[in-house]
Length: 593
Image (tube, rainbow, N blue to C red; front, side, top):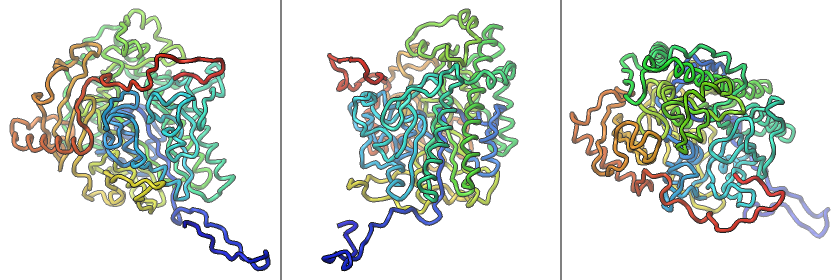
């Protein structure tokens, strides 16, 4: 029996010896861990990754730590979060899509099994305090109401405190807030200066202060995922106006300037070739004066949003530093997927118009240009800026070319990192983060959690790369699938195929491909990404045997990882269990998400 009494029980207290079960403690000297997970931030949008957008907090962390130039995600938010927290591929744990888009197959039901324990569940059992602030997006949509089970909410998956929102996005000024397991209203109004990212930073400081009041030495694991810079792009006016006129040059010129800085800083190899502008992204010079004015302002809003986010993360970092704890805090800064094209070719004053096929006129949006970024708008920039934000790569979020799956990753840990400002080029994936953190802390992955046998961890630690720029990556193979698009990375090569979604604005297909084409006949591309990271030289015709080997391996892994059946129709096979014929709404109930 665990913690069997080890004292002595006599007839009286004088004849007895008391004994207390030992407290669970982490390994000696265990670091704090702060994971900063941004949303829809492209590879090239941090200052330290080539951008001219001001991100002084992230840049300082990079200059005193490491930038990884070859870090990969899953192309979409929920799957990346699942991979990060569990160390398993997203389909292997039922999260092959965002939690809202489900189907009745093991890889796509959004029901993450207890056999895929999260790092929060491991650390809390090893003496850590565990906190989540911001976006969750890992519980089925039908379980996000106040009357639902909390089994798959943060407090049901190893986090001791939660302040944020359960869904995939929220209004920055009027968020759908949940505090632990109950809904709450924001503490202030927009007129009083409220913004959710500032609120999350304040709560992060509060959680740390509360911990230190109770346990001065206990390490914490904090997952800080503000939802920025996912639409709606909203930020205080002063942050937005700081960029007035900065993007009038347009996305073509901006992208070339970013690319030059990326190579000059050593982020990219000198021989890297910039991928070409695709035909579905208009040349900036071809736009009308009003289009340029509107699209430049939309990018100014986004840039202000990112700089504002950087400032709030900076507040949390400074608070940890003021307590004398930054030296032994592992800080990771990353994004969940490539920059988002969900504003469409023309951007949107309200991205819900775009998703619901409601046309917007340029004339009307020009009239409302000063409302962009305010509580009156739910705006998203045009996809030309997403394409530029993923420099030097092709495509964007939701797709398996490098623009959708390659993201920034910064690692900062002054106590153990001798390297300062260096670049690491090893191939990494989101599944590698969890086993890496466990190794750095000194905790072995458990075989069981709460009596449940754990399925194998599929990621591999990259801890050995922190001190050795020339170390070989241990991650040699990675299978990708997102909404029908697929890819396989294997030993420096990549096979990839884009599969268009049906029914999107601009249908039948924005790039000219057939969304109804059979998965068996479409044309895969082949790149030697070890030398051609931007996927500019398709070698499919030169190496047909290599391509067929890669495709065969993809199918083999797809079956193993629960990726099948393939489906590029997000609403197909939706979960009807929560679609009841009758609901009762009585006074005082919680908000319905």
